[in-house]
Length: 463
Image 1 (cartoon, rainbow, N blue to C red):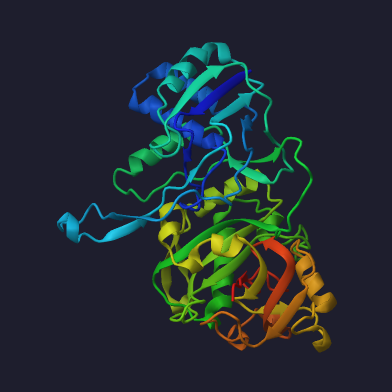
Image 2 (cartoon, rainbow, N blue to C red):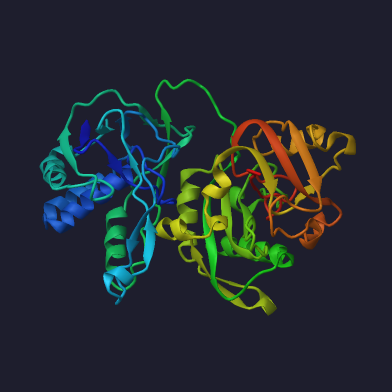
């Protein structure tokens, strides 16, 4: 058994999530711990024994169990505020420098300790002293204002989080080759500081002995967000062609054989009858100057995607940097993560579409397989069986109020008739929707027959 005890010496955690610089990561992901070990090994020049220990460490067969209090953070609390700091690379005198917003997401856990616990560690006798030496040189975990002390031992409290393929908590873990990948990224960043390490392996965890209380949440869970860097300003009538091109590009990048959860088709080539990869355009809407153009897009994976699929798609999308759309030309695209997401327009931020809320309104129109009855649509009416089915398809409860019409509730959103659907959906009713649930549900809310092709994307409505 191997147990690593991490003590936060200031009693507070400063570490942001991978996709949102304003949200706190708690507990620290095992991959973050491994990165800290690699940094200590490099900075202190600990030699070949340390390297061999890290190569052994990254290939442990099982991800660690974790003991942390509380066992999860959920990104629902942020103990920090926006801070504006001068831009360092400006030639202006300090008083005249422009300022840029930065975030220092902090969290005070119930206890300032976290344990990472491996029960099966064959070969630890050869590497224990090297792991201990590396741990002694780890100064912080996350931000440099989060100093830690790490103790290596074989005793630990009972875990509060354990790996479970049916768990709902996704943590970044490590696998063979992670050390080499981090070294390669370090070398590449000497010429391009925007390069970031890949996501790597993702493992599902569950809280030990947690009560089975589930909050309504969409079946779409994991997302990759891209923005257009240069090459076009896309109107809504281009959405269908754009989404088709994106899907084709993903299929070409993903190595064979392409699983059904990515392709959307079963072994016989028929449309898959369960949730699969979806693509949704992100539009410039919801503010007085919005014009509705497409700023970027998200590639969504359903909740039950395997970690192998997530890892493979992550690697495939690392080469996704352009799209070719015939007469519309070639355009460059870039992944929206980390600092980029923090500075991006609201319509390109993942949390805009994934937060908890009870009222949602469509940004792209909903395509209906069945026509809802007029008597069941409107203020105080729940939309009947049609809306119940639309929400059930993505794991959400029946709404308590549903409205439809040609115009969206969000400023700048094009009318429903301006969006051109795929040919197989041309005969379907196309309308914007406004729905309210009896309790907050977690997005993304993507409903209707065209939910895998960019239609039916909603945002929380606070009006």
